Length: 165
Image 1 (cartoon, rainbow, N blue to C red):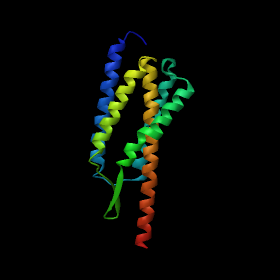
Image 2 (cartoon, one colour):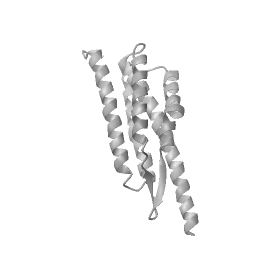
Image 3 (cartoon, one colour):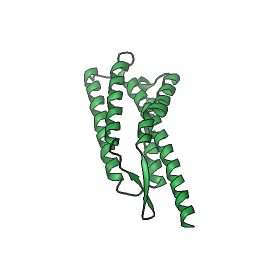
């Protein structure tokens, strides 16, 4: 992996994850002031999907079953708290995400679990591989959460259409 000290890589990845979590919290708090649209629901996972380009680098590649396990863990385990804390409400004919008091704590909890898992996994695989696996885990989590949001959003739009008829 070049001449970068693995300790610095580990510290850098942990700090990067912390900064990303804080950024997500900040963005989510600001976004609850604006109406939700299908585009705003779909853009984050589409933008995130470009991260799969990291697997072009041989040092990042992992066995397919590891990738599948990481994706399924994100889909079934880590997405659940996000889905549980995401609700919508209608105001003046528009749909807004409702601010959840627990969302901040859910993200911090997910970050803590991710950091602890990272500590364990880094003993067995390289830092680039664990970064790739945690990216896949996060992608599974985000995709499931956004699919959930899209279904809930569409059901509210249909409900509003029935009420206005």
